[in-house]
Amino acid sequence: AAPLLQVRDLRIEFRTRDGIARAVNGVSYTVEAGETLAVLGESGSGKSVTAQAVMGILDMPPGRITGGRILFRGRDLLAMAEEERRKIRGDRIAMIFQDALSSLNPVLSVGYQLAEMFRVHRGMSRGEARARAVELMDRVRIPAARERVNDYPHQFSGGMRQRIMIAMALALEPDLIIADEPTTALDVTVQAQVMDLLAELRREYRMGLILITHDLGVVADVADRIAVMYAGRVIENAPVADLYASPAHPYTKGLLDSVPRLDHKGGELYAIKGLPPSLMAIPSGCPFHPRCPQAQDICRTDRPPLYPVGPGRTSACHFWKETLDAASAADLAR
Ligand code: SF4
Ligand code: MG
Image (spheres, rainbow, N blue to C red):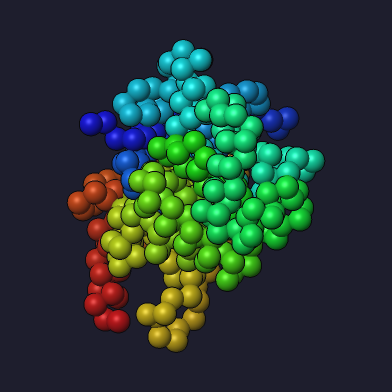
């Protein structure tokens, strides 16, 4: 069977007053049914924009898809008739955003908003839909769901609101959920609870999950694979355990070295120097070369392709082998 989702060589640009911002420059990744793919990158790396294109909330100016394909179960969303595309995106794919307060309607109770999903998409009666809403609030562990069903979004804490967003996303039992920084606005303990809940429900409902984050710390326990993005490209793609054990790209290595890890005894935390490039002026050759501690002459002139570097692994670094070997040696020494 075809994979659940394949993004193939996707290209997206934005017209701005200052010129064309090349936000996505040939991104490819795959999500198998029931799999969790973490898409990791700094802000401006193109991780959200790619997901927005999948979700179809980018089909308007100033954003423009200039190339590539988005295959859902083998069929290109970008090439199918509008009505069918809308049905897939409404029914089979759901999105969870960082900020529940601006995604939920402030003047409608959460129970009403949940019930509307069932009324509009499943044709349920008012009573039935209301009962399902309470059930779902229970399912995402909102305490006293039956008493709180008529409460408004602002009456819930940030963590509880994010649970309500998860409930909204689950309502139609989609095949794929895209969660864009779902816990970034929450404090650390609540973050872990919400992430655990999302992972648990993903397993139970057997959904695919794309987890977009800038925080390598949150993905280790929940993701199967990681696609690391930089300047609108995937620069490393690997099973999560492989990537943690031995990154094959200096940027990934820099990200790992800047996260506190239990297995690093002492040692200074490292910070990648410099800033991500402007999308209006992406550096020649390897876009990471101005910040890369391992850059050589060829890095300034030749854009690295995604080299296959191991089973199910790719890296867009000319010197992936040296990076991988160094990382493996360091891993053995620990
Ligand atoms: Fe660094 Fe060169 Fe590899 Fe780019 S290609 S990550 S600049 S070593
Ligand atoms: Mg974003």
